[in-house]
Figure 1 (spheres, rainbow, N blue to C red):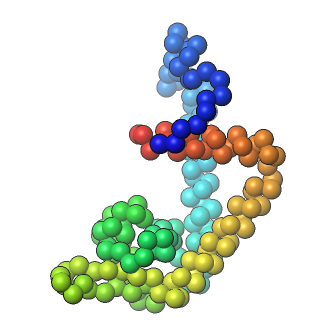
Figure 2: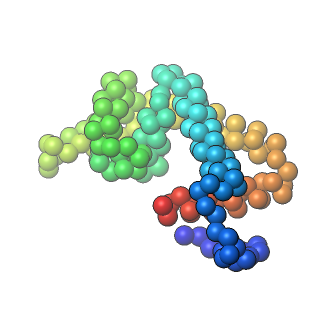
Figure 3: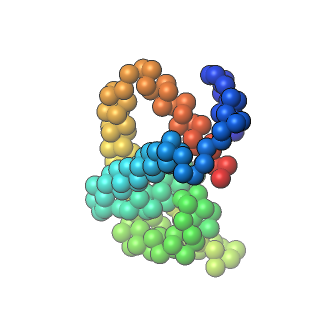
Length: 166
């Protein structure tokens, strides 16, 4: 967990007499805003994923990103890094292998184990996806003032920590 300087009182300070409840309008607005943000992220990443040739799902992109970042992986480790189940990863990998985006190779010591690697075609598709994503991120960055960027960065890091603790 990263440590950041606190800018003001912690959430519990000064609110001990009134902790938020589930029916609190501020709490409800907070949860709606987080839900809407996460939904927008999923929709945007899904749209970006579908723009490549061939069109790839967000989950497939996550598999490819894990391979690009970590090299050849076993199916279980790849599934974990991509946030999907091993059976789901196996189904997706069959299609990606058929399309020449990844290669699946049985390990020599244990025929049941499969190592997955990104092909040159897969690496090119992922690079195109990352370029499109980076362009959209840059456009969003430019729309914000420096103070807004700093606040969003700090709050996003903190929100990530809180979600990881759930």
